[in-house]
Image (cartoon, rainbow, N blue to C red; front, side):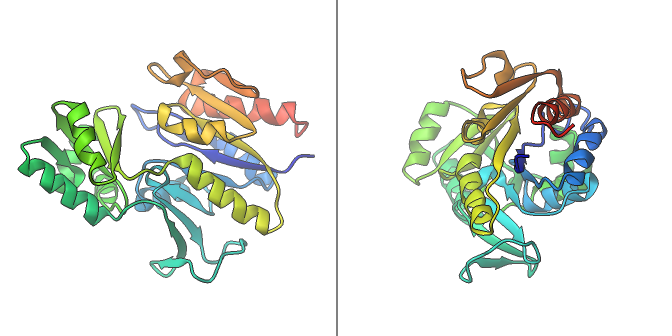
Amino acid sequence: MKKLLVFTDLDGTLIGLKEHLYEPALEGIRKLLNLQVPIIIATSKSPKEIELWQKRLGIYGPFIAENGGGIFIPKDYPLSVPKDFREYEGRYWLIPLGKPYDYIRHTINELREKNFLIEGFGDMSPSKIAQITGLPEEEAILAKERLFTEPCLFEGNEKSLLENLREKNLTFWRGGRFLHLQSHHDKGKAMEILLDLFKKSGLNPEIVALGDSRIDLPMLERADWKIIVRRHGGISENPPKWDNLFITTQEGPWGWREAIFKLLKELGYD
């Protein structure tokens, strides 16, 4: 039977966008864990947010934070990790792929000096972030603890903004109401690096990737089994023409569960 490794987005994929429901996906998570299939979260969320979600979902292991800005590997996780990797908070090995958060904040201040109307999470109180996002305030506090990217509210010409960001070797992607400022990293590049570590540790799995939006495309296109979770306004409405692509009939955590059980059955696990 094929060895599998699952990479999954959170918001709009495993978690409902509006009501933040995740419970319908738990059955699929338990099934994968019982089969000893690692589940790697790959999201735009901060490391602290991901730690919270790992606890909620019953997942333990490496994760990809801030749209591929950093790969975090628990120090006690059975992966062969080079000795020159950085430590993070004494508990993780960290592979940084993005520019430091302070650099991005400095760039935002420079943009404001040029009269760009831009406001990042670093400028907002937790209560304001909670009001805008619908997150509980305690989670908004975690969302502010960023290392590589900055979600921003922006009013103005996005083309002009991008030209100015290029001078700093930065870019942005749009996710709902926010622009996310970052350097040139993505989930797909981070996934390749982490997969290489799994291979060096003796595991040569087939890759399953689940996502719902354009930011997930670099991860999905590198996967052996590509799953797009249906969402109004998401990439399910105009999907790429890929082999081994499955688009769920349901949205959010219901679609996530649907896809996992369908794939496991197809691969002979059920």
